[in-house]
Length: 302
Image (cartoon, rainbow, N blue to C red; front, top):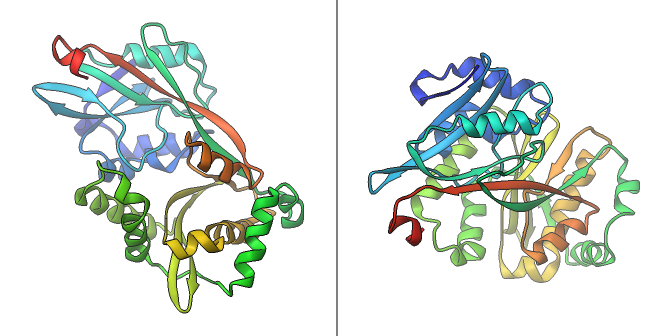
């Protein structure tokens, strides 16, 4: 049996147990993370939480629609069992008809045959850290090896202080200034996510300092056997000194020889894709599934 449940009827203990036991689990999809990241979410449940899919939604112009919230890269179906295309179809068939526009991310463990839906393929990059650092670093690009050497020569210092505000500020003053849709409310959500992840001891901070000033920083969420490169910021000094390459290299050093997979969380942008591949990471595909059921003229405007 498969059914849609509104947020108020979701058994969060059973939900989180299913996510935790799933082979393809991702921290974004625990109930506490969804409660922060999404203004509203419901759930599609298969056979008493044997498989689940979060449905994040909003309402605009009287229409309810499914959307991908900020700070959640992948959603989709999660289960301790194998997930095939027929199960994925069941889940999408169970989406209530009240949702007139659908933008639903799946995850790298999902298979979908998109009858009646449009599918956009996205890329992320994974690096399994089970080998020792010497073996892992042999797969680095020559450019990354040069940048690591250059960063070392610039006397950059690695620290681990919890510097959420500094990293957010570096991002907002740099790359974030180009992202017009990111508003103060989204950064408040991000801070709350960091707070709750920190309370659960899931966060790791890496910073690069020059002359005792943080010039670049990154936040990793490490949950189970996955480390997500969730957020970073850098100033011009960092970009010119190879600081971010040095930072990620240090994370790889610290976690080499473990079962952790480093998920770079993107990207479709060619320059970032090259940067992540330069560490020896492997491209993984996941889907954004969309469907437009809005009436005219809203359908055409969307």
